[in-house]
Structures are given as structure tokens and as C-alpha cells.
Image (cartoon, rainbow over all chains, first blue to last red; front, side, top):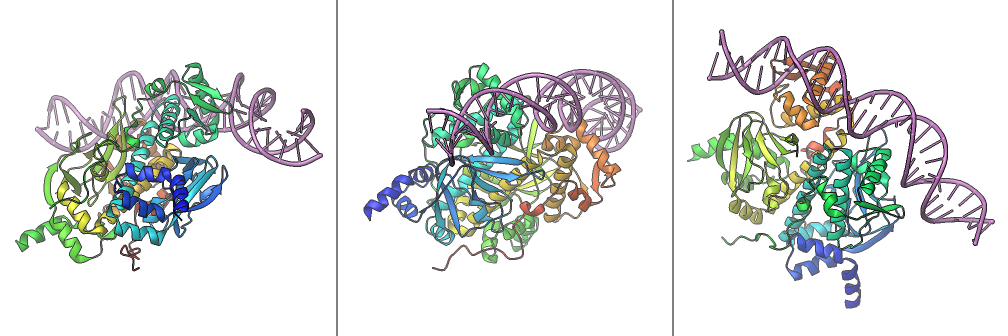
Length: 255
Length: 255
DNA sequence: CGGCGGCTTGATTCGAGTCAAGAACCGTGG
DNA sequence: CCACGGTTCTTGACTCGAATCAAGCCGCCG
């Protein structure tokens, strides 16, 4: 049984790390919380992890792979709101806003595996460990901040928008513990995330290659010069993470 | 003293209503929570309620007037992320993400008055009334949903974008208890919120007037035909509010 | 009643979308 | 191991929505 726990602990390591960064710092709490997750199914690239408008009886965490939160446009197009990396919750707001308020869905951008937790269990954990609630709330705040950043970058040129997105992906990837400089996302996905046409994304990427900022790596691209990439778009990574150094203020205030 | 409380209760009515809609349904809790707010200063149109990058020792609630959450573009322009109405918290994520993650600010769009609560007091309330934490978290989820909707509408034509924004403003206004069909927001603000140029917003509004959807009301505009306005842009108000009817699921799960 | 900020309008420019067609890549099955 | 089919990527020509530039106008406030 300890072996089983260890196994699961290993697979769920990204979640544990994420929760810690969000402020769940008591080891024992973490252990209890993590033990209530089970492994969900694996998904192929393109599959919906959470279809639009569904409200499952459990909440979902991404364990492996890259996913995206998206919504369909009236004309059949797709707007990607955010990319998710291992450790990210897929559907927190779906859980908080019972009747799935936004018609958003989550899809696998690369092959994924997920973890799930029963909603009832999650709610119980939330009442038992207020720190967990705060952590997840904070994670919602981060997501909102990322949406703001995306809105902001929407007012820049195509080059800056693409550069910004690549910076964001790269940063997320690094902080999810993936060292690879390759961004394994199709140009179609980049287009859906930036709101540009695929054609124009393509041209833009070529410019970035000519600038020596990106290079080709098979079908996808590799970040060669992150600093210059960031410089193109005044990218400030701060909105993506809570500063891990000083694990913030205490939630149980001494009165 | 009861007279004072009553007075304050009156002014803070929008906040009370908002908290109720978010799920704080125990009358006694509400009373305690509300009693910890005090009135802040009044602000003129255009003034910053919360300057970019500030982290005050208290949190702020809008009591009267309309405010906006915005950020400055690199070129000096302004992106408005959201409009806030009486009862809305101005800066929750600033409180949750200590080192003001996003460089966002809040400004008064019309003359405003605000309420404030010491951060220490708020934190104490949060530990004492878990329902409050859930309510505020939920409010953050709603904000995130609104940001998603804005991102979505950014991919439509100028007419649709403006129509969408007007629908949103109107809906928020109504649910804040303001009956007026007039939207007291300048075209400059509309431009900054839609990401269009002022010139183009102006032309677009004229089209909407010709269509008989809007009419002029002094300097600002009046919504004449909300249904048609909403029809232009597939506006779905659902993302703006938690359904008030069934005040959602219980947070203290019976185990 | 003067002035300043916001609204209106026209002329021109340009970034990005669309359409269309071909090339490279990848998985699959023979 | 190679041929095939479907994605995804590339490239070029053309179009168009919205930005920009430049004035003039209106209305509110001092």
C-alpha cells in the first residue's frame, strides 16, 4: 500500500508542487489532499478532457501533457483562453459556478493523462483545510491575471502576440519542470490562441526564425533566444506565478 | 449607534446584495461582515481608486458609481478589462497575490464612493466565515468568466464588439439595481474597453442609432432595444451572474 | 462667453484575413 | 520498406476592416 501511495505520489508530483507554490505548505495536509486523487483516463491529442457544458461529478487535474481551455466561436472557430500544464486544475470555475457559466471546454493539445477527485471529497477537503481553498482561489486569481495579459497582448502586432504566447508557453513549461526548449504546439493551436489566422501565424514564425529567435524542430519550433523573444513584446512573466521564495502571508491570523 | 449602523447598512446595500447572490446566505454572518467595512473617500471621474502597483493595507469595495479595471499599454494606450458596479470588489486578486502580480489599476469612470476593509480584518473574517471565502472566490471565477467573454468578443466585428460591451454594461447596471437605460460611459472608455479606436467606436455607435437600437441621451447613449442589441452579438448574459434562484450547493458537507 | 474635452466626419493607409494551391510530414497498412 | 492519405505547414495574390491623420463641431463648466 505504501508502494501504491509512492507510485501515485510520483505521478502526482506536479500537483503537489503546484499546491505548494500556491501556499499549501504543511506536509501532512498535502499528503491527505493528494491521497484523495485517483488517476483518470489517458487522452489522445485533440480529445476533449472536459466537453463544453458538461458538469461531471468530479474535478480534474492535468497530470501529463499539455491541455487547453477553449471556447467555440459562433462561426465554428476556436478561441483558446489558456494552456494548461501538469499540476493545473482544468475546471475549477466549473466547480465553483455550478451551472457551467461559461461554455468553455478543455482539450488535450498533446497526449495527456489526468487525475480526478470527487466533488464531494473536494468540498470536504475545502472545509477541512482552509489553506487548500485559499490556494485554489489564488490559482483562480492567477488564471484571471493570465487572461488579462492575453487581452493586453491582443492589442499588439501579430509578431508581438506570437512572441508573447511563446514566452508564456515556455515559462509555463519550465515552471512545470519540463526542460525542453521545444514548444510542442501546432501552428493551428497558436493561431487559435492568438486570434490570428494560421497563415499569418506561419508568416510570423518565419520572421522569428529569420530573427534567430526560433528554430525549427521537426514540425514544431524551438526557442533559441528567450531574452530576445521576451524583448520583442515586453513580456513580464510575473503574472504567471506566485513568488515561491517567501511563501506569502499566514492565513491563520493571530488575533 | 444603531442609527449609524443603519446608515451604513443603507449605503452598503449593494455589497450586501452581492454577497448574498454569491452565497453568503446567513443573515447573522452578513451583518458581522458588513459591520467591518467603513466608508472610504469619494472620487471624481477619472481619478485612480487603486493606482497600478500599489498594495494598500486595506481592500476596496465600490459603493457608488462605475469604476473600471485597466492597464496601460506600452504605447500609452489603455486597456479596460472590466467595468465595476456598486457591490463589486475592486482588487481581490491584489489581495490574494501579494506582490501585485498584474500591473492593473482601478479608476473611477463616473464619480464614485468606496468602502474599505482592513486586510487583517478581512483575513480574520475569511478564517471565521468560510462561506465568505467561497463567495469571494466565486466572484473571482465570475470575473475570469467575464474576461473570457471579452476575449471571445474580441474576435467579432466592431459592431458586435460594441454591442456586446453595451449589453454587458446594461446587464451589470440592472443587476446592480440601477434602472436607468442610459449608459453613462464615454466613447473613449468604450474604445479602451473594446480595443477599437475612438473614431471607429463613434462610427459604430452611429450605426447602432440608425438601426434603432440606441438613442442619444445628452452626451451618452440610451439602450432602446436590448433584445436586438443582444441579437447582434449572440450575447449570453449567463456568465455575469450566479443564478440567484437556487442559492447553490451547501459548503458544509454533511459527512 | 470662452475654452477644453469629447464627439463627428472625411480621406488615406496598412495590417491581417481570405482564397487558393502546392509541399512537407506522419502514421498506417500492405 | 515503401506507397498512400490526411493533416499541417508554406507561399503568393488579393481584399477589406479598422487605424490613423486631420479638421471642424458641440456642449458643458468655470
